[in-house]
Amino acid sequence: MQEFNDIRRSVKALCANFPGEYWRALDAERRYPTEFIAALTQAGFLAAMIPEEYGGSGLPLLAACVILEEIQSEGCNASACHAQMYTMGTILLHGSNDQKRKFLPDVAQGKLRLQSFGITEPSSGTDTTAIQTSARREGSFYIINGQKVFTSRVEHSDLMLLLARTTPRDKVHRKSEGLSVFLIDLREAVGRGVSLQPIRTMMNHSTCEVFIDQLHVPANNLIGDVDRGFRCILDSMNAERILIASECVGDARWFIRKAADYARERNVFGRPIGSNQGVQFPIARAYAATEAAALMVQKAATLFDARQPCGTEANIAKLLAAEASWQAADMCLQTHGGYGFAEQFDVERKFRETRLYQVAPISTNMILAYLGTHVLHLPRSY
Ligand SMILES: Cc1cc2nc3c(=O)[nH]c(=O)nc-3n(C[C@H](O)[C@H](O)[C@H](O)COP(=O)(O)OP(=O)(O)OC[C@H]3O[C@@H](n4cnc5c(N)ncnc54)[C@H](O)[C@@H]3O)c2cc1C
Image (cartoon, rainbow, N blue to C red; front, top):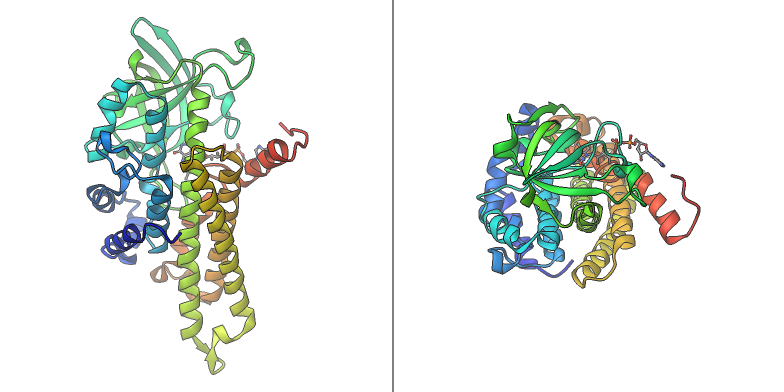
């Protein structure tokens, strides 16, 4: 993406203050990158897509893609903050005017962190409409009970978007009906109906199990219409897929640069390893795959910004970019030989980090199933 070169340069300059040593230390301590997030917030990058009337920059999704791609391409990790960019869209598109006025300016200024969303549950997994967490209206409150899993950044967020069933699955025509989205104020809820249990994962990702027991949520924290929450979530899923695809492109670019530099400099058998086609061609192949994925990301983001349907393009972009970043990661590790495994080269850390995007926020199989059934009109498998 050639546009937004000023943004690209500013992000690059900011990331230079957070070198590999910083991320290695965080990784070892499993610590949240508070300083990095504060710097991004202060620079206004996390409010890029919030409209100017609510204190943000009102930039298109393409600009947000550039921000996240550049963070990853500089060896940093946006996973600690990327959610704010797309969860904000749920409030913007489906929230009431009061909700937008109440929350978005504070999110834009960094006074409130909207970093967390709870959809996945232990028993339902990928099958979102089978979630068990329920919300029952009682007067001016909803009473919520249930459990979420892999809820990332929840310990470092003030607000969480939560998907719950408001009408049982056997009482609706379509299983996607009867779900609703709530904005949970974690500052009040944790310890009063919500408890958190961190999950150690192969990379530092600040993800938790969330237990919800008789949580009282004011009815005016319902986002959008009751029972129509699946639509609200779907709307922000396209943005999520496109943004994470741009992170994957950024990761891939980091791996390719790192591998090419190493292959030029490392001499074995009296010549640079990069002069061997067995080393050179995988780098070139990863480069080609990345450039193709980047074009698809750009196409999907352009459609999104033009408010055109972009589900197919967002899914393809996520599929191709996640595959390109994984291909580049594997190639980069191989190019480094034994040193790829040594922490000080950062390759093994980035390798672990980028592997996630084959599984979350949507797994490769689910994207293929979407293309198979929605685009190619093949029979549904589930
Ligand atoms: C580090 C991390 C952070 C996460 N953060 C969040 C978060 O912040 N919020 C949130 O809500 N969720 C989050 N998730 C959850 C993530 O979105 C899910 O893990 C993912 O959607 C898959 O769900 P599952 O793990 O239950 O796998 P399952 O649904 O059990 O699937 C297991 C495997 O089977 C495959 N599979 C299942 N059904 C089919 C089928 N019909 N056809 C073909 N293949 C199939 C899947 O593709 C997958 O490979 C996170 C996960 C991780 C690991």
